[in-house]
Length: 75
Image (cartoon, rainbow, N blue to C red; front, side):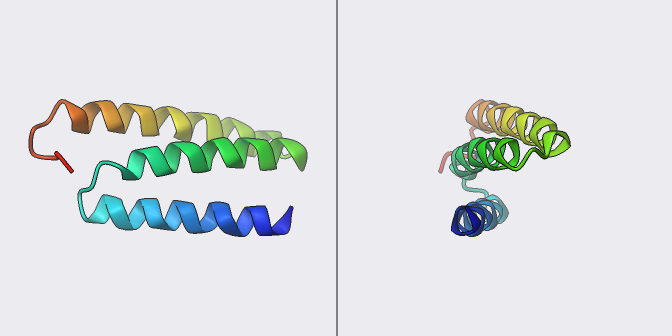
């Protein structure tokens, strides 16, 4: 399970880098990384983290929709 955490961490960092470059696909990466964290944190019984992961997955969807409606961010 440890390697799974490293992969998810890398995905989150990649999403952050894409966000800095204003590339809206960061939200897709973040969404799937957060789904992975939900699985990981549920498996390790860190339910307070599961709540955070669910909220962050929701904000990834929100960000995608916001950036999709703004013509400035088309990548």
